[in-house]
Figure (tube, rainbow, N blue to C red):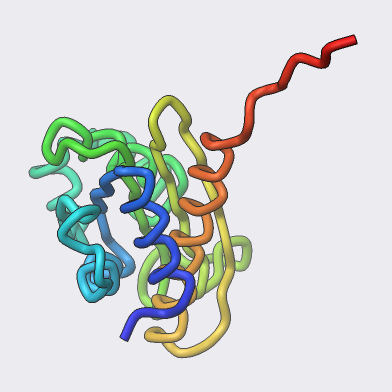
Length: 170
C-alpha cells in the first residue's frame, strides 16, 4: 500500500490533469510501482524506465560515458541527465530521475555515504535538483526517497497553482 503522501500526490496530479514518468536507478522500479498502486494511477502514471546498471544509463538513455566517468552513475549530474533524456521516450508533464546509494559497494565516499539519494525533476518549465541522505536499511532508504519524490512533486505543482496577484480597487 502506498504511503499517504504518494496517495495525496497521485490525487493532486489527477485533479490537475498532470502525468508523470520516472527514470529509476536506486529505487529500481519501486517508485513507479508505488504510484501504480494508487487509485488514480491510470490517469497520472505514464511509465518508467529502470536503469540500475550504468550501462543502461548509457545505452538506453544515452548518458555520455564522460559524464558517468567524471561524476559517477550515482550523482546529481547523472540524475539530471536521466530525467532529461527520459522526456522524448515517455511523454508526460513531469519527468523524475532517481539515483543514489542504498547499499555499500557503489561510489560511496565520506562526502557521499550510503543513503545518499539524488532526485531531479522536470516539471513543466522548471528543473529541480534535490540531494538527501537517508538512514536505514535499503528498503527504508528507497521508501524515504519515494516519499521525497511525492513531496517534491506536491510542492512544485502547488507552486504552479498559486493564485495570481489580484487587482485592488480603490
